[in-house]
Structure formats: C-alpha cells, structure tokens
Length: 131
Figure 1: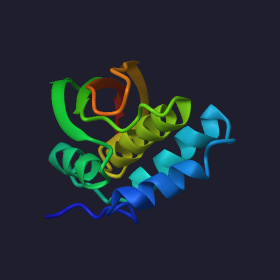
Figure 2 (figure 1 turned 135 degrees about the vertical axis):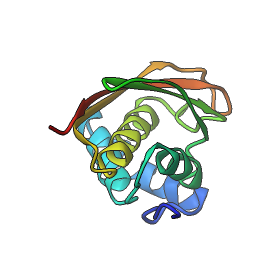
Figure 3 (figure 1 turned 135 degrees about the horizontal axis):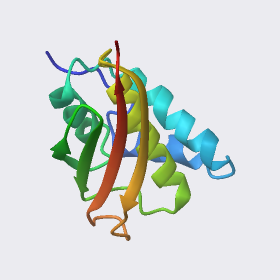
C-alpha cells in the first residue's frame, strides 16, 4: 500500500512550509515536521522510506535497525538550509515512524550533516516499541 504524503508532493510546497518556520524555535521546527510525518499514515519502515522520498527530503535508506533504534541515510538531503531544515527533517522522520503505530515513543536526531544540499546526512531514531 502506498504511503499518503500530506501536502508535500513537490519541492516548491516543502520550501514554502520551511520558509514559514525560519523564525520558529528548533522545537517548533521539529514539531512541524513531526505533524507532517504523522499524517503520512505509514504502515511500516518501507513506507517511511517512501514517505521521506515522496516528500522530497532526499533519497532514504535504512542503514541499521533494532528494536530500540534505526539509522537512516538520506542522500541528496534537503536539510542543508541550517537548523530549520534539520529540525523539520528529523521531526518528519519521527512522525512517519510514529504513524506506523508500532512505537510508543520516537525521537530522531541528525548525527551527521553533509551540507550543502545534495550531500548525505545521517539521522538516528531512538525507538520505544508499544507494549
């Protein structure tokens, strides 16, 4: 089943959303990305990867996974606009993972940024499975 990607079907729309967050705090940026990610309605990790790509945040790959964490490599990452992009991208991944219904808590952070846009970035998700 194809993941639903809330309103981020083209890069211009995503840029517009990001532009509105320029003066937002890092927490607000993360939460905005998380809200968008939750609305993707992913059913599993394959859908999360698809949602990241469909939202045009970059080409996503799952590098490592366990019950407590996941590591994503985003090639051609669009986060290179500074903290606004990084916070939004991390929040989007968090929200998409939460939308699967598998996790009770997800926190994502960017652990490596390949600035400028077009490079490879790495995001680590801390996961808590539902009981």
